[in-house]
Image (cartoon, rainbow, N blue to C red; front, top):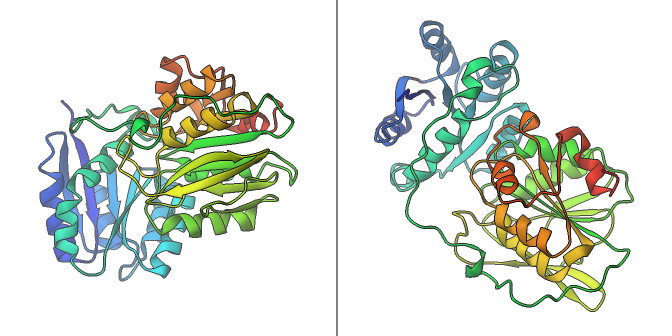
Length: 359
């Protein structure tokens, strides 16, 4: 079994020590080096190039964003950002995602060692996910199949709402579009939403992203798009020309009151090990919008959303999966396709047409 070679780049000796211990507990991961800043990291990379880099953003001599851009321009490599949850840090991590980072792990400013130890499974999952990432022009490394060691049984969407009972109206002219995505989704969503005209169906989105990041992510997209994009609030109405993004750490559901669609933002257990969960959103859309909806699954690790898309399919909705060639990680779309959930398989460049009902 070929191991995933990881390089750690963080100016904190404590972080480097804990990350090393956590990652080397995984049988399929080996840490080939640790550096206190990007300058030292480049020396180590000249001797052995890693499969995945775990990178802090605020460091001496060269910041993480500059280093990330340098890597992506010279030899694109999957990067996991591990950074503190400060307001400044949040904006910087979003810049990192835009520059090509594939995962974010957030760390607190206090209680850091205990947090990293408690988040061991999430760190390992992020590295495995990154190792599968099809970073453009990555070459053979992008095809590496890292083994997945599944933890205990996971909850499904039944933990939040039942599928029983169809509360959808008969087919109407007002359509709802539901999008689910994970690894690589920040770039994919930007490509789709910036291609939309101001007049388009109302959109509800789950992007797997840490708490506190989604508001800044939505704000950034709002500045780039012709449509309005913002983080969803409980009881927001879904309107044409508006995209609502599920807040990190909360589930997003669609519901209907009379002829109007609204969203609910609720707490609840992890579903498919995620909160928000794509399956939860898509089930609610199947239940309350039925054939008036379009469901879209894009790039991401795992299978969250596959069953929800199948439920939308069976309720008469239009269903779409992103194709393998344009995905960063062909996990979620692949699982949806295997279930027979996707009526259409489209490249990223055409998904905005599916939103508009033209593909």
